[in-house]
Amino acid sequence: MGRRLKGARRLKLSSLRSLRKGPGLLSPPSASPVPTPAVSRTLLGNFEESLLRGRFAPSGHIEGFTAEIGASGSYCPQHVTLPVTVTFFDVSEQNAPAPFLGVVDLNPLGRKGYSVPKMGTIQVTLFNPNQTVVKMFLVTFDFSDMPAAHMTFLRHRLFLVPVGEEGNASPTCRLLCYLLHLRFRSSRSGRLSLHGDIRLLFSRRSLELDTGLPYELQAVTESPHNPRYSPLP
Image 1: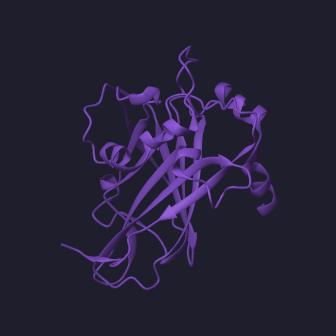
Image 2: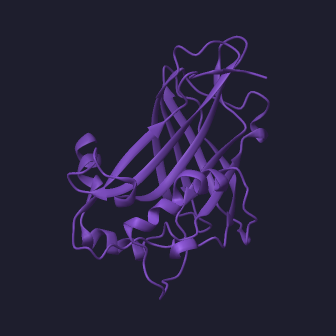
């Protein structure tokens, strides 16, 4: 399994071009110029945060997306499938692709949210209205030291970066492909759960690089620091 995943991460130009025909991106081919790595900064920083927090007025909605949520660790909770509210925006500054924002409301699962082990792996699989997989996210976590009645989050990003520059690529040399934002909460008894909602960003159109250089996927997962956990309000 590890060898297959490692091999799949290395993408060459021909593989990137094949994304245009893949089921994960629903937009039709566009005649407008394809974004370059320098444009990817529009999906970072304040722009990214503004999208996740709903500060942009949506241009429209798409119905029919769903997400399957699962986890593994000291125990494996039952997988659940929930609808995803997907909106798109007209904020294509510098000719960057305006992304989709997907929001999975966890409130239908009850006040306790989706129970997960203290450490392990979260799996979120996003399906389009045709029930074709858009993206499967696998995020490892370890909150075994989280105190009771506290909360935190994880933000998982997938970038395309030049081969050989995984640890040194500057923000201007990488393209944000996908983002997953997870919120965690521990109960007063110390039980951990996903709560509130799950938020995702994914591109409205395929990515194609004409540099002739090989690119590969780089995963980056971040969480708060100092403090890592915050008390529940």
